[in-house]
Length: 308
View 1: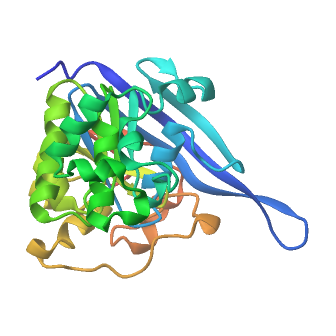
View 2: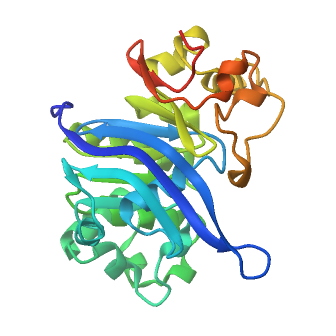
């Protein structure tokens, strides 16, 4: 296993706003991500978990530089110690930074699958080896995306991302639609890539999947990071994790009783100034209404004034 002390990606205090029109011609900026921070090192898998709308996919798009034109970003994204400018994003995207998107609509409907998977930096030989690994026969090379089943399209997306020699792999919900055995094979491959020195960000709703391969888990809520914890702490749950929302996620797992919590994640246009989880938390006090930063605690990071 490669040295995990080499930092590949650092996202610090990332904020993303979308400029949009309100009533009439009045413009407003809708903040959907605020003060979001994560890091991932070489040889490490960081699993990003949280409910829908918590900012998981937007983080991936911000790193890759594929946000819509009306997006405004603040904060810092560094790749291998250097600021990830728009020019560097274009240079590294698909080469050193690989992406497995959530939607199969990312496949080009006008290009044959084999050529898409090979990309700019791959080779025919590498494409055929990776296709064989993922159960895609030679006939698949000559197909177009509309001719693929959902599972085949998902395997093509994975193949396209892992064919090269990337240093950072971002996988956004890579296993839905895959047969369980193929899903297991896919995440094992992520672990192999990580053990060879690749940094992996796995965005997933499947926390049990994250348990199998992740080194750390980043918990997102309302567009920000509320906790970053070693995976072993999240497996234990209870007092081993630091944030009340992390405990709620753990308790909502089927094996832990499927226990729901009342309330809803706050809407991006109406976020409280203090703790975003406060209205759903049994520990809420006046102090929770104040802005708070991430802080170190017991070998992890947490955004909560009551965490111990």
